[in-house]
Image (cartoon, rainbow, N blue to C red; front, side):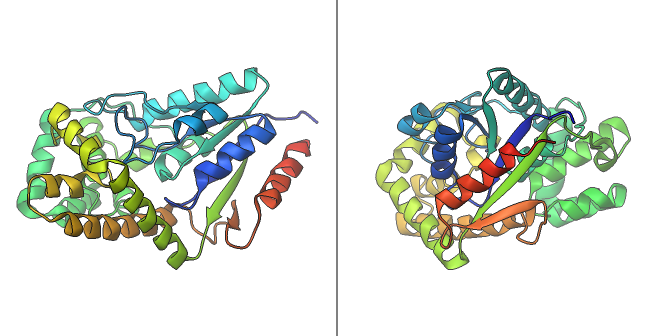
Length: 309
């Protein structure tokens, strides 16, 4: 029986502890980490995106962190292409590729072999759609998508204006629904998907603590520098933390109000991540980090690596 190459995926919500587990596993299992985080791709956005520290990046080789500037866009198709190239490169070196992150689209595009429409951005069309959303509401934009692509509309939250605009852009440019164009091609590798979780109250408390650490660590100063250099119009600046701290910098909110808003938005984001990675998904092996040890996780991965397919 021919043995297929293997790729480990580690998923879970923000603040659950993915980075620490991934770095430790990479050190012990001869692995390299491919970041699947749609915000950590941006240079200069370090504190707000909770990037792995310098020490963590030295402890295990990381890929697809700091690859574009905040005023640039990285499409899902570009990310997928770069991630698969990283997988191939890591395998050639005889090491274990580990795709780690909480961005559901990024993970599933690699894991499930999405075929992503190669439709370049149409800025004029995007502005028209954004204007439509502003005038009539994001719910109206969502309904407009539903009239041409019910499958995509069911998958996209009506508040996610960026994804709504992209789905409509693809349809209006190609005449075909994005849900049809996004077919799948089975990947050439075998995968194990490890899901990390914690009880929701503990997870929220960890997220709150991390936000406090970000404030102490200089999130306000980082946001001010980014806004001064790049402004507020780029998608990167919609990342968790920057809009809330931006409101504080513009004196629209007190710092306490901005932090409270960030905590609320982060909790909503965590719930959204569990929509991508559901606890009853039989394709994900879940580990509750409050009740299992890292040794148990490592042994599960070791056993999978020794099975020939």
